[in-house]
Length: 137
Ligand code: HEM
Image 1 (cartoon, rainbow, N blue to C red):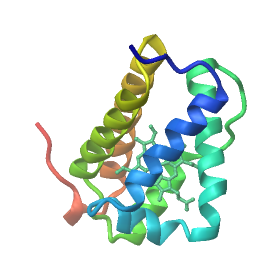
Image 2 (spheres, helix red, strand yellow):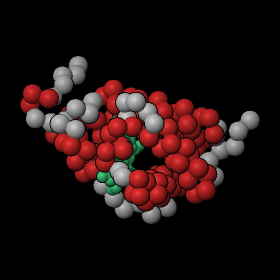
Image 3 (cartoon, protein in one colour):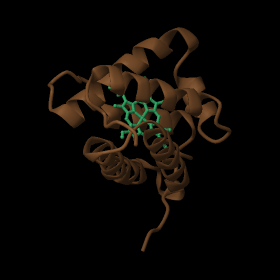
């Protein structure tokens, strides 16, 4: 039986393990490593730890704009970020969460990521130039 996520230290451990996977991932690694240089990673991990602390515990720490950052990232990659990228992101996130924790907050971390990913993907789709838009039933 694993423990549930209980505090900032647990989130920090989760976020660090997740981005360790991301950095070496063949689909997502090149995107993240292009946008975040070596010396910026500690700041990114800290920011994402704040993000999840705010999300899971309601502590008002995170100040940022994922939507803006994702739109910039998609533009940098010629509007080629698509649903497969979000799906893969979610797979890695779920793998990381379940390898470390179990319980209500672990489940919430997975569900919240799904909701956010869906919204972020929709925003990117809407912001793409016409010829890059994908049709979805
Ligand atoms: C295809 C999937 C995704 C990609 C490629 C991606 C990529 C990125 C990149 C490159 C940055 C940093 C940009 C910069 O600082 O210049 C970023 C920031 C961020 N991302 Fe994502 N992301 C993805 C999905 C998600 C999801 C699903 C979430 C939340 C559940 C998320 C939350 C955030 C947050 C909170 C930030 C920080 C925003 C800020 O600095 O204000 N991302 N993302």
